[in-house]
Image (cartoon, rainbow, N blue to C red; front, side):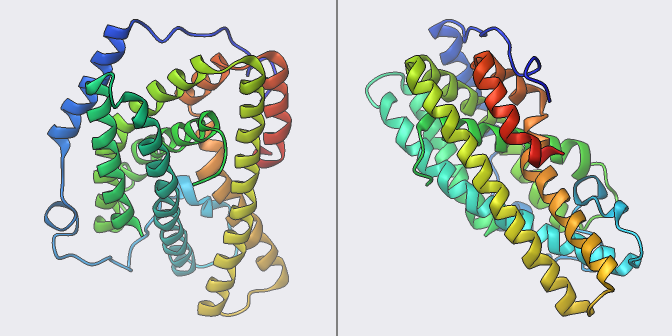
Length: 294
């Protein structure tokens, strides 16, 4: 990723009428796709442990040599458990931040308020399905948008198209995807609205906050990948030193891809982020992300 790639002119958000119409569209879709966990998703089923939970496009296990098919299947299930738990964690701060920003619509745009309340209700449900970060609102909204958009990409490009996944695990993310699609629109609207309020120094500080959040996530991914390798070793026994080193490398690379890189490279997020950055800010973000992407 180059500095030139991260520097683009600002894109206008559009008129107030257009913005309200986008909030209204989110409400319409939310009502149409509404689902319940037990009735629509679980349906008295259990996970099929004879099948993978996450596809190779997310796990990177095709790069793991010297391990059996069964061992790779177990690793996909371990990664799948982490994937679901990670969303259970991040949606707690997403919900807290969306409830906070909704206050600015209490006596204003009631369509926007309804859309955000529905968003909050759906995110609480997602926490139950999956079982706040003290940073600027701009940075948390940026991270929220990043997460919502990469979940769309993961489902459409990897989970949906893999026939070898556990049906129940696949359906969990099908129904999650149905509601996240409009959440991503609301994220964009609120992020742009917040960005329009900032002075240049405030935005610059917010960019630093975003970088800190990304670094914190990367540190968490390092710890989680190590914990998941230990869990695998506990279940299957100690591999050779070479295999163990390779396993640690593949798991960390997979987690960085899932939670950082695939979001940064998601075209819509890339466009949104770069429309708000100066050249110097773009360079700062690039330098901070390079160790995570390489």
